[in-house]
Image (tube, rainbow, N blue to C red):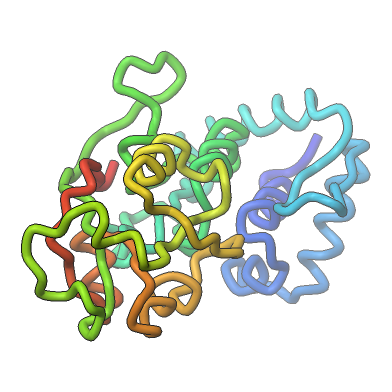
Amino acid sequence: MLSLDQLAILDLYLWFERETDVAEVLQVHQSTVSRQVRAALKTMGLRLDAGAVHRTVLGDTELLEAERGVHQLARLRGRAPLRIDATYSSGPWLLNSPPKGWLVGRFALPGMARPLQLLQDRVIDAWVGSYQPDLPGPDDPEWWVLDLLREPVQLLAAPDHPLAGEQRLQPGDLDPFPSLALPPGWFPQTEQTLKAQGLWSDPVRMQRYDPSSWEGRCADGVTLTYGQSLTEALQPTTVRLDWNLGLITGEA
């Protein structure tokens, strides 16, 4: 059996992926985090997957899953802080003043698969996502999804882009310009919709959101990207183009 504190340190490490972040949140030394993570893994007979992109444990996780179920119930009963994370765009607005009794993440989880896996594993208790086309549907038996906001996805570019200010753009108008693409599989339905329009052509290599790798790429005056009101407010360096992407996004 693991104590609440010991399992919390292990799961916070899997969530934040940096010992320094865990140490900062818990106000302990980094060496304490490292020691407790090793001890928890040893107790469970598990090990970290050194080759994985994200912090992942290897071995028989049946006991760990059972422990997490008990510990999540303890959090729900107020014995420890509940855990919530959000996308880089929704977090600063919706979780700027976190509710009492909640521990808030770093707003840096990539794509859909990683946050949903952390929810499924009971590492976190809630997540504010911004990608309705790829979120589980309202009838999905495994998830409870509450829509908070819906709005169209916008095609964006730098203010000095050749298409900025142009009206009634046609498909051929977009062809000469590269458009950003997240890693394959992050948002499958979104990816499919944009590729059908000749977009999503310039792959970006990143595991966590970095403005220099996304909106910042538009500073070249030719690259196209995508966003909505919250992302535009965070990075007001782009303008909307007169193009209907046919995508609805928002917060949920």
